Amino acid sequence: MRTIRWKDHELCFESILQGMIASDSTIPFDFSSALKKCTKHDPLADQEILGVSSASIAFLEFLFHKAEGPYSSDFEQIAAIICIFFHKNPHLQNLIDLNSADALANMVLNKRGRLKFLISDQLELQIILKWWKKFGLAAVSPELVFDAIMSKPTIRDRLDAGDPLLMIRLSDVFPEHTDAVNPDKISRELLIEMAGAIRGPPSERRYHQLYQKYVKEDKNIWSVIEAEQKRILPMQMKRNKFLAYLVKKVHGSKCQICALTGEEREGPVEVHHIIPLSMNGKDLADNMLVTCLFHHKAIHSGRILVSCENELITIIDSDKKWTIPVNRPKKIE
Image (cartoon, rainbow, N blue to C red):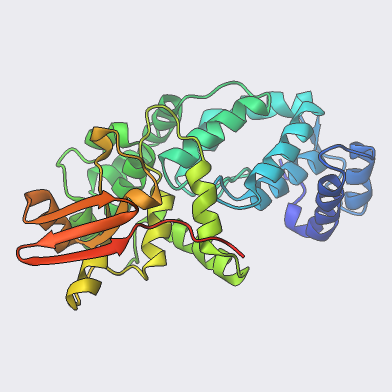
């Protein structure tokens, strides 16, 4: 059944959203009337699906689009509004519950769907699943989402054919199922190389888009880093990949050790945790050192020694020694 397209009413929906934001998350007007007014000239306005108006479905799609994903700066605010909207529309909750796992699966796969949050990695999925329950929807586990993805014949065919970007995407969102999606244990570097002309893994493309948005908004990146450091990770997670990406960007995606030695190595950079996470090190910027692959391997082999004391990182390579400040958010004026 055809329903209203939210893009045809974007300006009017935006005015409703801004009114809700201005009202401090309360709704000072009749929701149903506001949506009817927005869509009264749309020939599909009278359509309903299981008791839910076409306008309500379109507005929900619009809200999901505006929220983007958990790493986006507006996500929490708009998710709270989605929560209000769901609780005022129990029929809408029932409608979404009919196909929750599949809807979330399509979000992970970045497919065209009616509802679309952006999910780039395990943390974003976990945050969205928490909000899913707050929306009053039936709880969905990562396992159910993964099973919904793997039940799609096209996905199984792509994995059987060795689709490198799909392997990376699923491994980023479901690291616990890496063996299932990448049974040959192909390294991430090789998968990226196999992807050829396509630039970067899906998660990193998402991080880059967010970063570009923050730059365009002239937002201090250290303020974004501070916000990410305050994010509480689910118990089973130790790494915030978006935080690591931001720390890399602070250094221009260049190796901090190469900057000291005067070397210039091409290729991706990684984040080394000075105190390993396995030894209760913190996943914070001041415990991170941005390195190229060469120097990262040298650290783990013991050829280069890295330590941290009194907010200074000491790096020793044979008879050479450097001291640099830790990566700590600078005071924002």
